[in-house]
Amino acid sequence: MDLDVAAGFVIPAAELGWRFSRSSGPGGQHVNTSDSRVELFWNVASSAVPTEEQRERLQARLGRRMVGGALTVTASEQRSQLRNREIALEKLAALVAAALAPDAPARRPSKPTRGSKRRHQAAKQRRSETKSLRRRPAGD
Image (cartoon, rainbow, N blue to C red; front, side):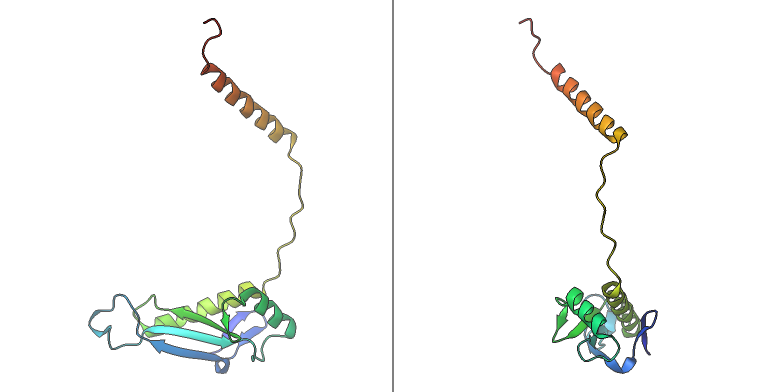
């Protein structure tokens, strides 16, 4: 089953690799016999799907998660291997989609409004009055 990441970006099933192992945690009587933990990996470096620009963006944003050009995702939340496979596919799709998303526009700095300046000064004045009431009276 091909993995649909974003509009026009589909990872073919042939490029996805699976590895299964025993999962820790609850599982009942069959916990020591079933390989329910799932590792899903996709080799970004040798994939034919991304353009060179997309490949560089993926490398820049996910480089720390990659080992030898391959992006790996694990899932062991559920007792069922099938369900963990679905979760791993969802995780990989979300990870790649987030890495391919364009940068947010740069924030334009703005000045504080007149009202916010006034509220800031009023709060400082209230704090000053509170502290002045804690002082010893001047007549002693």
